[in-house]
Length: 247
Image (cartoon, rainbow, N blue to C red; front, side, top):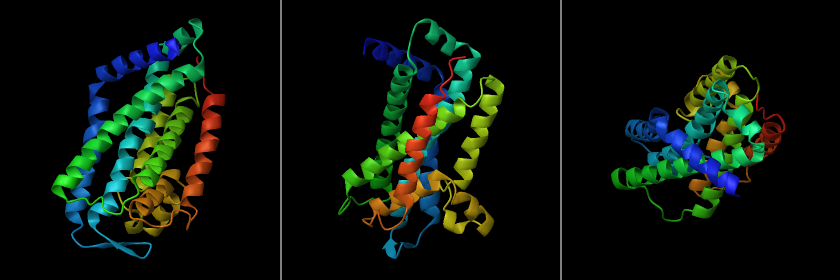
C-alpha cells in the first residue's frame, strides 16, 4: 500500500506538470457540451423516448471526459514514460505492474470525476438539466465501468510496442478514431452509413448508447450495448495486465 501511495503522489505531480493535457481533458467536454446543446434546439428521440437536447448530449460528454483522460492521456502518457525510461526505473525498484496501474488509474479517475462535476454544474445552471427520475446509481455505475474499459484500452494500446515513437503514433491514431467515429463528440445517427458501420464496431459507441439509455430511464438490458462494454472491459483488462511492458 505504501508503494501505491508513493506512486499516486508521483503520478499527481507528473499530471500537474503536463497542465496542457489536464486542461484539454477539462475544457474539451465543456466545449462540446455547449456547442452540441446550442445547436440542438428541438426535442430528440432515443429508443422511442422523447428527450431534451441536454439529456442527449450530457451522457455523451460526461463520457468524453473519460475518453480524453483514460485513452488519450494514458496511451500517450505511457509512450512518454517509456521514452524517459521511467518504466525501467520502476522495474529496478521492484515495483509491480499492478501497483503502478492502480496508482495511475486513481489519478485519472479523480480528474474525470472533477470534470464530470463541472459538466453537471454547467448543464444544470445553463441548460436546466433535470435530475428528476434519474437513476444516479445506474448511470454512475455504467460510467465507472466505461472508465475502466477506456483505461484498459489506453494501457493496452500504450503497451503494444516498446518503441516510444511508434507507441505514441499508435495511441494518437486510436484516440482520434474514437473521438471522431466513436459517438463521443458527434451522434452516430447523423453519420454517413459507412461511418456508422465503423462506429458500430467501436466499444465507445456502445458505451455512449447505454449511458444515454440509463440517464433517460430506459432499459439498459433491452439492447446488447451494455454486454458489449462489459465484454470489452474484461478482454482489454486481461490483455493490458498480461502484456504490460517495463522496457
